[in-house]
Image (cartoon, rainbow, N blue to C red):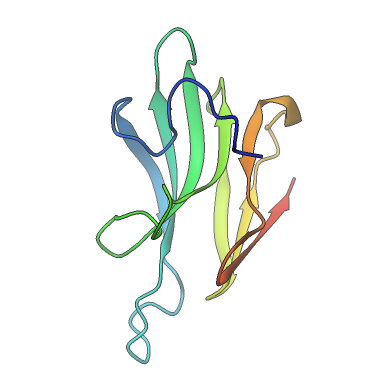
Length: 120
């Protein structure tokens, strides 16, 4: 999934990003570790796409994951409540009980060194 994104890029700036929540990596600041934080973001990309709600990985200065836009989950046409948490430094948990499968356009399970798990 993700290769066929249409309309607005969930991590791009042309739609106007609103950070809904940030979940810091639990190991940040320990033993000189400065890993990536997870963020839930929303974008209003206009009439053709509407609202996008996404989860992205960003560094401590809000730069996206290297060589990518940082997006690991994207939901088009709505603003469902998405919960994010870390099981440990390398396991991100994403829960979206309101999400309809047909509106999920990105659902990454590995973005090395991170593993991503989804629950309802």
